[in-house]
Image 1 (tube, rainbow, N blue to C red):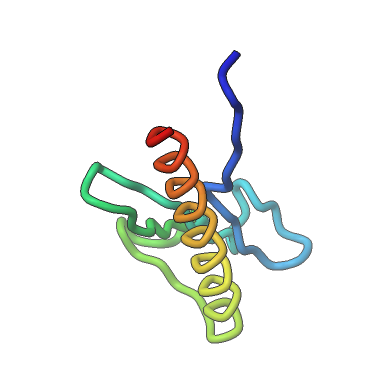
Image 2: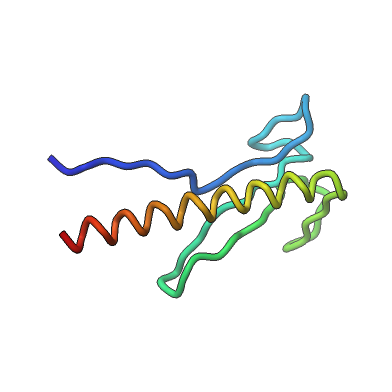
Amino acid sequence: MAKLRSVATAVTVFHEGDNPVYGDTATIISIDDQAAGPFLRVRQTADHLGHGEVVFDADELEYIMKAAHYLMQGYEAATKQTERDSDN
C-alpha cells in the first residue's frame, strides 16, 4: 500500500463573522506549481472587485504573509520528503 501524506495547499484569510468560502472579505492564498517551481496565487471572492484585482488593508497583509510563509514551508518540506523517498 502506498504511503499517504497531506500538505496544506491553500489558506483563506477572512474577517470574523464572514464566510471563508464566498464572503466579501475572503482572500484565498494558494500554492501553484506548473513544473517550474512553486508560486503563490492570491484571489478574492468579492463581487465588487474587477478581474484580477485584490484589495486588503495593512492588518490583512500581515495574515496573508503568514499564510504564504506557512504554505511555502509546508510545500518545501513535503517535496523534500518525496524526493528523499524516491531516492531510496
